[in-house]
Image (tube, rainbow over all chains, first blue to last red; front, side, top):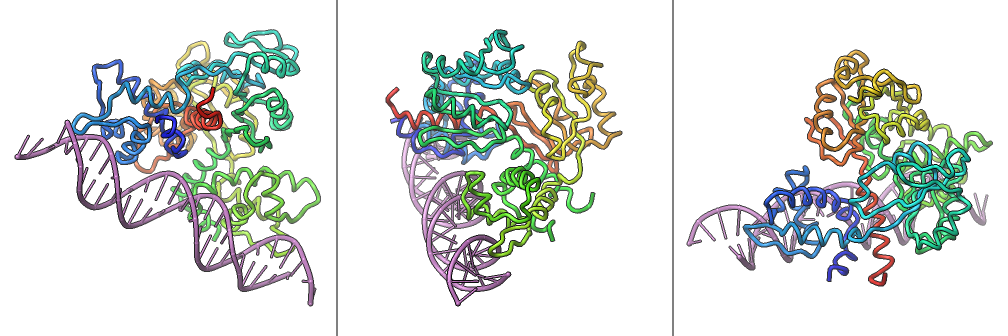
Length: 216
Length: 216
DNA sequence: TAGATTGTTAATCGATTAACAATC
DNA sequence: TAGATTGTTAATCGATTAACAATC
């Protein structure tokens, strides 16, 4: 049931699920066993109708006058995202951004655990960054297979992004979180999720230019 | 004319503009003075029709059989995003992620220059990170006003995100690039662009769960 | 009962995709 | 001329918003 619900969920809804999850977990610490869509919407600056639809998409049914059961919602959202089980990931490219992601404690709440890092810089290999050991990229394939790694985080320079992605795919990795500006080519069945800083900045710039108008 | 074009541009189009810009700049180094939408689309893994529409939205007219003039496209895109002039920005929160952004050289190509960083950690204040000096947050308001800063980059912990955003707004900052999970409340006229790692990871997780199906 | 809240159906909007005419 | 490519109009799709019925 919940699987079918998750299968038909729109991308926009999926993107909002972590917002709900965060807020709901905070509520759980308090006394509230139920929360209404309107309250949730107000706390997150979202449209109440949108929230109600998203919550409905999780398969959890609310009760009029009371709202939605907080605990059931948390479980349903974690389930839809696969965040109830921890997924191990490899990170390739231990530069500035790679180090930042290795040091980010929040992934724990998102079912993600970075269990090894990779680079080609001799000074890094063998060291530990935020408790995660750094290996040479040439060891990636062997380790990924042995550990059944599903997710690869790509924080290398744009120039070698495709080459590393190829190695990841060959090593059996099924999902690539791409922080490089490169447009990756992968075989069908492999999922690439792009974290596009430039695109985000473009939207900000454009909206600012719009707001400012021609007058500068 | 180009202003009007930029005003009516959809968000999806704006998000793709940096992709085109990057590819076009690479082409400029080669001999090509013209590029066809189809070629551009193939290089970026995009739908050709989509690309043609996006390029049309910049106001640049292509010529059949030849394609679009590369140099004019670059100029038009830079113009639409305001990336032809460098915009100075402040960064608040010199932790892992803040340091990563301070060390990222690519912003230069996106019309963004981080001219100062802020934190409350005494060990950081007065130091330089990637050539950018770190100040105490209490100095932000004064400096932002004096330097007419328009963009603030928010890389603090979620707990104090709103407080820092309030300071930014009060200091005359008009656009906030929000890397925290907080849902910021700002007055009308101030633009907030969220860089939502959790949302992105959620999409990846969901697509992986979808691809895997129930069988795990 | 009354009223707040969910759930559902319809309307609107924007983005993508398709088809085809215009043009060099 | 012929053909490749742009430009435009229409169709489809998904997301958001609106309106209202159902329910505790």
